[in-house]
Length: 463
Ligand SMILES: [Fe+2]
Image (cartoon, rainbow, N blue to C red):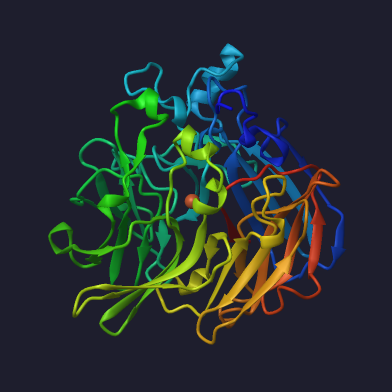
């Protein structure tokens, strides 16, 4: 069976787009929303407004923001498209005009659409929808109107990763952009007031799809994986990325006070990382916890059709310990359960973390008929041990997000927020779990007015 003739999983079930923008107040709640939890949870994800041209990949859809606002124990909801220039053109035409990743042709007009579909972050008073291949898109926090592409007052010329890092002490936003064409990698720093104060080209051995990175208090860590941009045999291979494990994976460590000339590269086994959980300095070493794929061949139609693809191209929590004094990377699997979307308490970003949260696949629900993720897993990385909340068959879980009870609360003193799709009811709930007891009685379950398609990343903006 060819990829063209099989139903596209990214347009089926709860991957299918939701077509209506709307808002609802005073949502039904089971349990009690904590009165001290006031703010908005923003979640971004792909939501193609028109039937796609050619083969569709999950990464292609127009961004849609789903916002759950909690206010003194009450919950409201709003969803809006990231109304990109490309989407406006398509609305005028009444059909899709832009092709996706799997149909990408470097020479094609009209070219690339900035869908802004991957993440949404708040920095220096601006709400930015992000996709890694383009500029940020600024949104209005309340009504979720799209303001337009944001280039830091003309200072950002290239794309911005969807995974900037907000330093919890300095308030800076550290990020990078990558490109299939030179310069392949550029590092940027926006100051706490939002001004882009630094842009520096970083030399890399090959152009790679670099989805995310990590920071510590004093270092930046670039993760160069053997998923290589290649424009040869594009149509035959099925995409612009080629999996070339013989290159290995390289970790580039740059002092935050240094620059390109100070980057040291450390080799480790071939692997792909979409998402690090966190990193920190430990004496002469850097500890980097990641969701590690042993292989990532997602663009090859032939590979996707292979038996066992789903398990081979899957991530598990893994620790790299990079020895800055003697060199070398110690590589330690931390779990054998398939997981993704790692998060820590954002106040620990770049600092030693004890706890981490991930979406997890229940092994007994690991068949093609079930959602990819049906559980939330909480790791205690200091004392060992895992606690897990299983939502069970037919319940698709998104990225879990920790929110502290107060600014000074302990590392896991707060809540875990997560969107869960319930196939039986064909709708989504917004769950609030006690972070110190994720498996126990939920704090609250807010029923949303309709399902929220599976998406990528979200963040909390306190009121
Ligand atoms: Fe991501």
